[in-house]
Every structure is written in structure tokens, then in C-alpha cells.
Amino acid sequence: MTASADFMPLRLCVLTVSDSRTADDDTSGDYLAGALAEAGHRLAGRALLPDDTYRLRAQVSQWIADEAVDGILVTGGTGFTGRDSTPEALRPLLDKEMDGFGELFRAISFDEIGTSTLQSRAFAGLANGTFLFALPGSTSACRTGWEKIIRAQLDARTRPCNLAHLKPRLRE
Image (cartoon, rainbow, N blue to C red; front, side, top):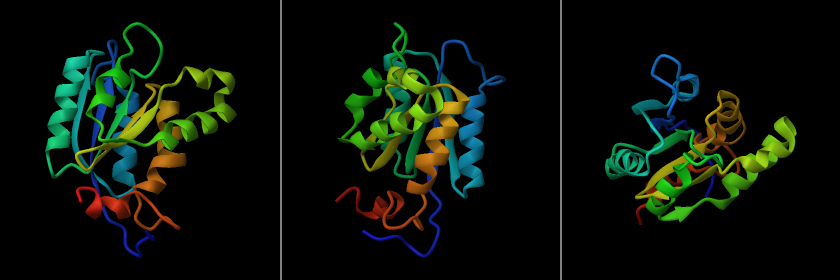
């Protein structure tokens, strides 16, 4: 696969997973929604839910069943506390896991936060032709994930290849 000469705007959803944040102080969700719009993509949906496995699965399942949604950015619930359940909730929905995403995210984060990055269970994958990226809940981690990995991979002009260019072939 090669890059495209033209930008292809994607329709992306943002899900914040938090037991303590509200719509008024969801800085991570606000950052991701603003960053995707600034990059030229469209916000197709947004939600803020507590760390509840079944509510997370229900919301993400709704989005991945919607052919108008190209991707989902999840922030929060990827740590090690008893309530952190994003990987357990969402990994079963994936058709394919993108192992390199979590590995790359932790490698980049090491330069920023040192060995604390090992507490991150960031992951990504594909579900029903929809990209899913799960990031830690801090705004800084969302910025790292978006600016250093996701933005370029969702831009069809990124060379030598990118995820956006694969979009038409994901349901083959």
C-alpha cells in the first residue's frame, strides 16, 4: 500500500472512560476532539462513561456497527487499578489487534515519563472495519499518542504507508 496525494477525512468517535471526570473537566476528550478536527477529520460521536465493562462494550459496539464511523479514540481505563477495565472490555470486540501500537506508544512514552510507561496498557486494533485506539487517561498521554502516532497513520498522505489508505479494503 502506498500513500495518497489527497487527504481523506475520517469520521472518528471519542470515548472518555472515567469514574471521576465530567463533561466540564474532560480535558483528554476535549483534546482528542479538537485535535482530530484540527487535522481535518470529523467528530462522529462522543461519550463519557464510567469504568464499566458492559457499558463500554455497548457504546463501542454501537459505533463499530455504524458503517459511517471510521475510527474510535478511547482515553482512560488502561492502567492497573481495580477499576481500570478498558482492555478487558474492548479487546474481545477486536477482529485484529495492532500489537505495534502499544509497543510504540510505550517506547515513545519512555522518553517522556521513564519506566512509569510500563503501567500503560494502551492498545489498538480493528473491529468490523473500524480502527480503535485506546490511550491512557491523561491529556499528556493523549497528546503523545495523537501527535506521535495516530495523526500520521490516519492521514492518507503519510508515506510510505498509513492506516487511512487501507480503509477501503478493511472489510474484504
